[in-house]
Length: 222
Image (cartoon, rainbow, N blue to C red; front, side, top):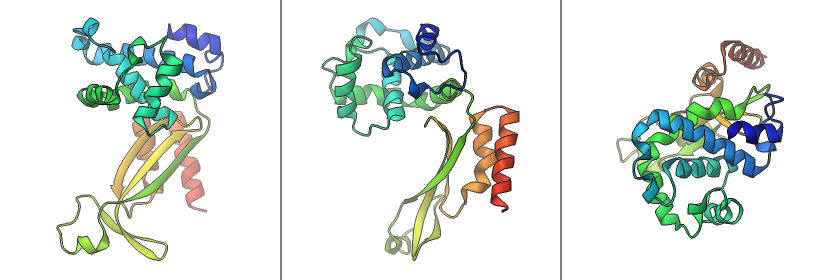
């Protein structure tokens, strides 16, 4: 089923073709196939009582990851769009309350990250360009820090004319916007020091990792 969807889109003819360029219906079909195969290996007992569920576990996880990849923050808005455009693929999404979907997702939350890591290479293809960036996340107001034990893993850092107490999220993405790996560090850690670690977690292959890290190291030293 996955091969059929990808062949129709031409993605198999060119391994560098990013999934977001194909039709969303074909993209979500490919995503479901990858998730379903990986989930069966990860949790062989996950199919129990599947006939009694409005959505299977694989369908819930597929929709959740598709929502993330599309960058839609509102769960209710996403489910409304899923019912409108994908109900023929996921009949159980019709009249599905966001609270019900959220409860199912909470029960499956421990499978989300292992499954994302299992399929990320397929989603990214063979990327020629990788993007690494970071963003500061404030965890406590400066006035609160002196009156508490602080926050584990947080640190002070200068941000313009201000001092920020928090952590920093570092993200490695393919050019097709598929997130490959991420790391949470104290706010005073620069992303250039995490390049090799992010590449190692992404498991893109030794040759590509060496090229990317070498390029970034050269750029950092100039």
